[in-house]
Image 1 (cartoon, rainbow, N blue to C red):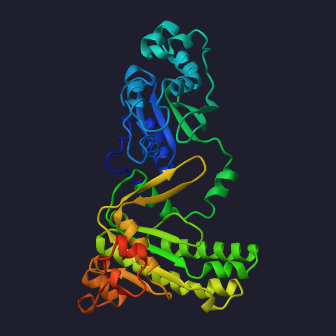
Image 2 (cartoon, rainbow, N blue to C red):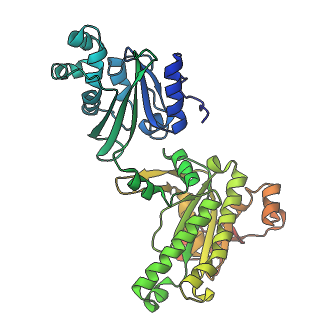
Image 3 (cartoon, rainbow, N blue to C red):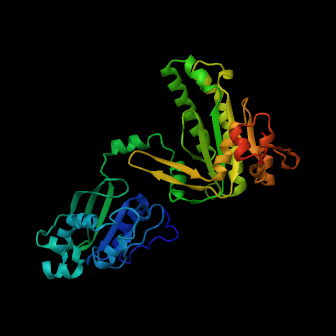
Length: 397
């Protein structure tokens, strides 16, 4: 795994550089200290976690748990960004530091920040080569449980040249595997890119199942739930395959975003949005067959729009993580979708005209020959569309 722009360089010491490279290539939550407990390397994965998607700055070259390290930690968005959590970490590593520090407890007091001084008399020197310890405290969620493995790095003579820490959530790998078994790693990476909310130009897709209320009354609750689940899975699959971001699911509604930032360009984002719509429309037959329904029983309507200024980001809680967006253009996309009755797809002019020549040709669309109607004047225009987005030009795709 190659280093990214802004990554910390590998340590000068060849053995520590080897350990740091292994951490980096493993994608670990890793930190590495030299024999004097100066922080010499931190993986990008841990820095992005602390920085909420951005590379957090740590006190490279300074003593672990020294005043510079504590001050840097207090600036992180997540992780051990409080004195309480810093003290938890010192409780795991302090014994090793005491064993390595010349001058014993007095020498350690000179190295670390004063917030740890009251803990030093209770420390016992630790000489193990390996240790697994739990750190529990405020972090990414309300309470984060982290399992830390401490590894002493020794040269061929047995002399300690550094200490490495590997950390992971305090879940067994069976549970982590179960959580990730259905996840698409490309989608997770795109979610990570937009983790920090910001204004991001993007194509927006809204879709909804027409006549869902009569259908829900006709089917048993279990059958309708199974149908909704199949539809959600199909829509997510189509959005992800097209390079988009799955938005919030409300009932049988679908929301997806295609930021130019993650798609590569505004034209690519518009193309991905249209491709996702076509793929989802084609998958309706499969969903209907699996639900013992006729294709005509499932009618999806679509609204596609371009947002120049939507505010897109991830909302993460202890129970879920999802991408959402705010802004007038998001509401306008919902209004466009509501007007696309009869299973039609309505796309805004601003979306269609984002396509460059090559992307339009790949979609079989001649943007020069398109004609548009004003949303508020459509026979199917809803009261909300006439109120909120009457002047938006749309065409049928």
